[in-house]
Image 1 (tube, rainbow, N blue to C red):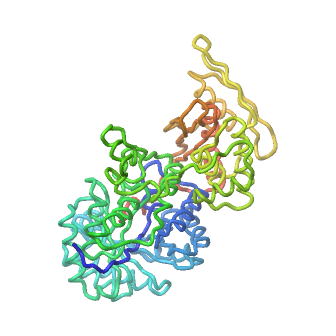
Image 2 (cartoon, rainbow, N blue to C red):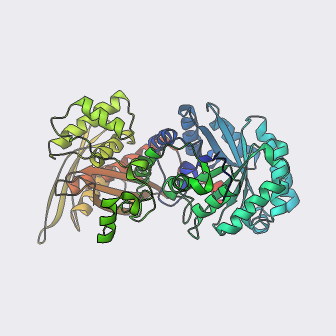
Image 3 (cartoon, rainbow, N blue to C red):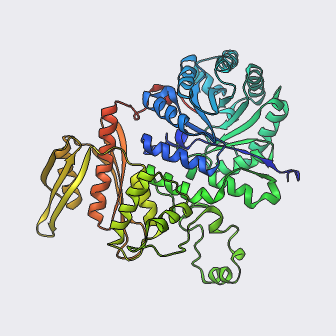
Amino acid sequence: MSSNTKRIVKIFDTTLRDGEQSPGCSMNIQEKLEVARRLEKLGVDIIEAGFPASSPGDLESVKTIAGIIKDCTVAGLCRALEKDIDASREALTTAADPRIHIFLATSPLHMEYKLKMTADQVFEQAAASVKYAKQFCSNIEFSAEDAFRSDPDFVCRVFGAAIAAGATTLNFPDTVGYALPDEFGARIRYIKEHTPGMEKAVLSVHCHNDLGLAVANSLAAIENGADQAECTINGIGERAGNASLEEIVMGLRVRKDYVNADTRIDATQIYTASRLISQVTGVKVQPNKAIVGENAFAHEAGIHQHGVMANRETYEIMTPESIGIPKNRMVLGKHSGRHAFEERLNDMGYTVDAETLESVFAEFKALADKKKVVSDRDIEALVMGVSAAVPETYKLDHWAINTGSALGATAIIKLLHKGGDARKQVAVGDGPVDAIFTAINEIVGKKPELELYEIGSITGGSTSQGESMVKIAFEGRHWNGRGVSTDVLESSIKAYLSAINAMEWDLAAGASKSPRREPLREGGV
């Protein structure tokens, strides 16, 4: 157990960098901006916005985020190379509080087989890269990639040199998720006690979840003196993912009697942040996921239900309200006015500009004509459909489907092109969805590979909106799309068009997002 003095641990969110590196989790610039604003509202201390040297698209997205976010530090990741540092410097020019984050591997395995460098060369390059970056930015973080599998004394030596060169944060990652909590906590304590000049810098940890222990290791590190935890919303990230932000934050908050540490996070924003990440990446949260899963506050067993009804604390160590799970306080329907609708948006944690409000309210009115009651989940879906959308190269005008067990399926799709012309196509397919997607492909003149197609309901009941998710690939690059409608075929059309528009927008802009360039394949914390 730690001392009675409560410490404030910094939360370094890398959802937009390490999280986006996980397969299928790429985001367009509008989605990244929406995530960055949500992270700012959540209260994270540092947003790692991307890896500027990895592609022109990443540099541009980091630059855009840096120019908008004012209440958080914005960081750009780079290798210990001057050209990478220059890219981060360019991307962070307009940031209110910029941080250049440099990484270099220190484990024998990585130094021999990946870097092909000696320990002395790594030591010298670490110090030189920090010194170079310090000319442009006062806030420098240095990460020793694969630190846990490195010699502890060598890490202390490298960290000491980085501090002497101007590093203000030293990050000790468990890059491959190899550590167990007790030994990881002990290692952090050793680094804290044996690094020359450690009192001048913040000690950070970055844990991966390959053995399912990323959060446990992060909490053990905090208990043993770590000052910063690096994590992602929903734990997304490379391979099995990163430490989950919501689990670290609520672990500290619920067990403050033991750890005596806390964060500046506004926990009531956790649920909406989790939902946002799930929606923009198309990666659903598992039902039994801690804190934010659908079943996290569900009780089915009779004895549990009886206990919760008598006293919630019998089976709940935190309340749904504490993480911002919305509760319907008033019924919204077709007679609801703009003021009531805007109030509900504010209650749900959304702040939108006047133009977006107008668009979302119009969508709400159209939905209210189809549904008697519009739920918070419905509203959430409407907001995401409007705020994170890319410019529409193609817009749905109308559609018709003819299908049956003895008929096959025929789709008639009419799209409006941004140039002003209408384009109509009839196509047949193995089923209605196949016919729809074939017709759209023929209009667009491209045939992307459909990597994923999922459909579900936003709420219960026969009038629920259908929510469709698609992932497409074209020429080695990948895009997500999402659509909602009370008609599941229409939601499928909207989802596919959303992905097509993202593809068209990216191809027109020439911003390469995926596959990633060689620098990212060389590693990362």
